[in-house]
Image (cartoon, helix red, strand yellow):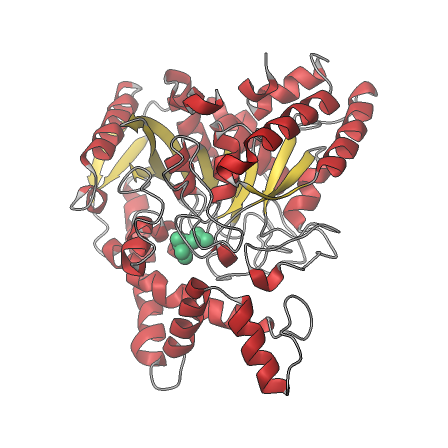
Length: 486
Ligand code: GLN
């Protein structure tokens, strides 16, 4: 079997049984990256030498009978994760010269699991975007149709895995940036519970919302990678000190008897008919597996987009104040004085969307408007939380679409930020409430993938992965490849 036709789990098994070596597998993917880079722009940096060195080490471990299910399996990291000695740009000119001096915990743990680093993937600048068009390195294209966006902000990771330039990749999700690109490229994307995975070494956007996760070919792959990256980290004060379950072992959980809440607010105006039909077909599939479908309403959920676009910019304006041209990153030429240094460094280093967010955030936190915007948004955030809590007293999981439409044309929404923000209408709620959520492919609409979203209570990743896995045992949507990359 060609390595790019295998899932990460299958590659791990093939490596263990010596069907191929890790060096062969790494070369295979490096060649694919090389051949297709111009078309997709999925990578900011390709770490070919590092990949081969990692692969040789993995082969030696496997030869000694050591290692685990991911040993020797390649991975690509979103360029938001610090990687020791490697450019970590976060898709921004501000960090286009930043060689990270240490590894993020996610990177460290996946390296310790024996994974092979192929490179760093393109992304929206500072993870702000829904289409991967705000990157300093240019837009990423959707492998299913090069005239469409791959979604964002983890668009490079999504395009890389969808085109099988990497078997699996990391991503981050502040308002949907794992699930939304996963849906638009036919992948399984998991955003874990807030605090499940350490944020240490992950460039901060909105700290109360940011969470690291996985863009994978299957629920099984997502389970394996989550298991390797999750867990308490004393270097992140919001990381939760709770044992990491064996996610892969939980995949066999039966769906029979599962109580599924269908979120009424997710099926209203704005949902594309084809996407809605695919999601309804998936829900019928769950009913056929013995799940019970219950209609639920989360009345405050429609407020999640405006709430998010107060809270996230507020936190970003604070987090991004560190880019001052003094300590690291971009610095303007020949500053006249300190104010000139700040102004020109930030003026040159940040793109338009990042500036828009910093200005909005500074405004909503200002003395005169704090109560009217920031405090109000925090109150609505609590109401949204309560809606979810109430729903989970009745049902085990919630289901609905991941995105309102399939992938849209490059450039279609760049002139209108509000229309762009509405892409995250179904994903943001889980971030505001810190809940885990997964998107699994559930159909093709005019040749473009769409996703089913499953949201669960805090720390219910096993349940979400189990449900997605059961669906994937019955269907082959997750096995479909973009025709150009088959
Ligand atoms: N699209 C949302 C935004 O632009 C979410 C981004 C994310 O999850 N990083 O903020």
